[in-house]
Amino acid sequence: MNRQLTDQWTRLWVDSALLMADAATVMTLRTLTMMHGGRAATREGERMVAEKVEAGFELAGRLVSGRVRTPEAAARAALTAAGKRVRANRKRLA
Image 1 (cartoon, one colour):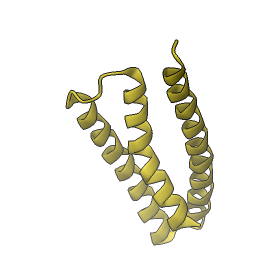
Image 2 (tube, helix red, strand yellow):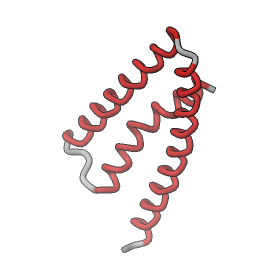
Image 3 (cartoon, one colour):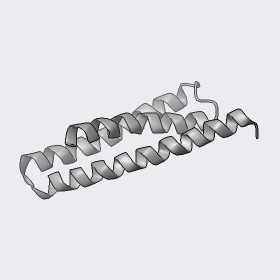
Image 4 (cartoon, one colour):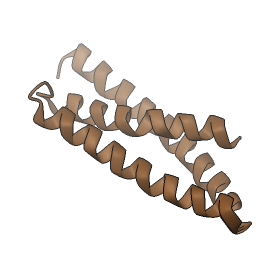
């Protein structure tokens, strides 16, 4: 395995770990919001499902476009699709 490929996968691993930490924060904040109930909880639940569907369609579009040609690119596309939503939620909920 060449150095550039190793570096790409290492960066992907680090980015995945950071996304997992952000996702854990978002899950905690969403849980607290939903525990309070009411309209805010309902909106948060609906938003959560809608975002997952949007991220799935975004990723599917990237994968079928033919531009994603390597496993690393597929993993990066998945991180990108999920990551922007997780980061936006972390900022919004904090």
